Amino acid sequence: MTRGERPTVAVHKFSSCDGCQLAFLNLGEDLITLAGRVEIRHFAEAGVMDEDAEVDVAFVEGSVSVPADLERIRRIREHSRFLVAIGACATSGGIQALRRLHDGAALKAAVYPSPEYIDALDASTAIDRHVKVDLQLGGCPVDSRQVLEAVADLLAGVRPVAERAPLCQECKRRGVTCVMVARGEPCMGPVTRAGCGALCPSFGRACYACYGPPGLYNAPALAARFGALGLDEAAVARRLRYLHSGVAAYEAAARAVLGLPPEAGAGDERHSGDCRGR
Image 1 (cartoon, rainbow, N blue to C red):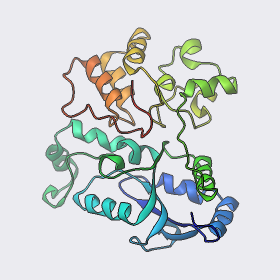
Image 2 (image 1 turned 180 degrees about the vertical axis):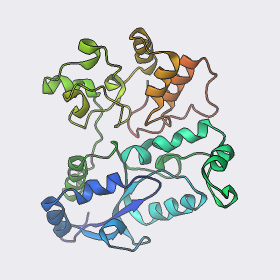
Image 3 (image 1 turned 45 degrees about the vertical axis):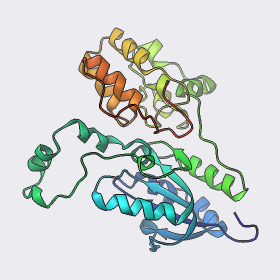
């Protein structure tokens, strides 16, 4: 960032539920403080419109799902110095990535009375499948604290670093009882990145992998553990695919459980930026 000048920021939406944009709006007084430190040039949900504005930082929510998105994400990349993908949809394709596992034409025919007017890509994909992403912030939705920390780092001239630890470490630090060990819950914590504050396990619920994969993880081993807990093959696959079927290691483990061949072209694990599936 240029010393003495307010950094410029844009917040863009692709295919998503808007929850990650609400993480900005839910900052309350912190948002007012943030607005005084940066110049927001585009944020439709906050009433600021200039999608092609040149900015220092662009936050992108949502997956690439329709043909027009392809050119749009390239323009955003060209007009931003630093691009941050926020939330499960932007970092792995989200729930909508599941549609690549089905007949797209049949799905459109079942939902829309005139499917010929629906212009959609065969798959919903993560932002980094199409352009360079400088930072990934997972979550469904992204945590407001993470957004503030990323902005604070950038304002200080420090390159933000993505969390790499698994959720299990966060549970241990907070003194949360392991729901898989104590209650037999099929928890995705061992293969999920920390950052949510161990929210679900704190209330006795299993993790659903909102934040995507950590730096090191073993999805096949967890799938085997789920089977030992009594889940059938279909239930294990659903757990692995739920929010992040676009993560190659999750999908590979799900297909192995179901006895399916590897997914074509699934060897390129780019979802987690600096964190690779193991």
